[in-house]
Amino acid sequence: MAFVLPLITWWGYKEVQNQFVQPQAVVVLGGSTRHLEREKFTAKFVREHPNIPIWITGGSPRTFTQRVFTKAGVDPKRLHLDYEAVDTVTNFTTLVDDLNARGIKSVYLITSDFHMRRACVIGEIILGSRGIYLKPIPVPSEKPPESIEKSIRDGARAIIWLVTGYTGVDAAKNKR
Image (cartoon, rainbow, N blue to C red; front, side):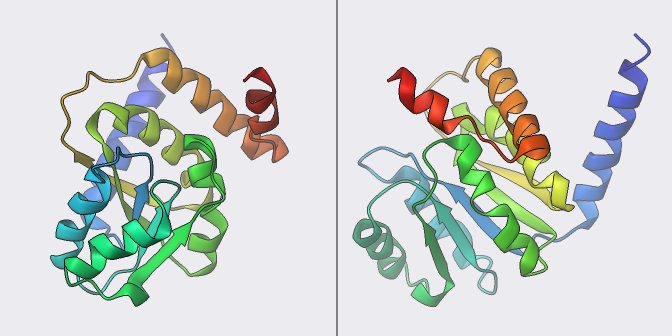
C-alpha cells in the first residue's frame, strides 16, 4: 500500500504536465489493417497541426503511406518513415534517440484504441526515460482492448531495454 501514494502522485503530475506541454511531433505506431486506418486518421489529424513533423514507425508499405498523406494534402517532407521496428517495444526504441536529438519533448501518440493502453505503458517508460511526454490520440476501432498481461509483459521489456539496451526481439523471433 505504501507504493500507491507515490504512484498516484506521479500519475497526477504527469497528467497536469501533459496539459501544459504542447506536442512538437506526431508518432504513429504502424500496424493498421489493409484499410490504413491509422494513416488515414493521422492524415486528417495533422492538417489541424500543420507545423509539426510526423514519425510513422512500422506499418504499411512506404508507397501506400505516402499516397494517403499526399492525397490529404500533407507535405511529404513532414513524414519520417521508420521500418526498423518489429513490434510495439521497438516502435519506441528505434525512434526515441532521434526524437531526443531533435529536442522534441512532447509528442502526440497515435495508435488504435484497443492498442493504446499497451502503447502508453511502453511509451511512458521509453520516451519518458528521455524526458519526452506523450499525449495519446486513439484511432477508433471495433476491437476490445488488449489484455493487461500484454501491457505488463511489454512494460517489463521496456524496463529491460532501459537497463540493458536489449529489447527481447531475438527471443520473440526464435519462438515463432
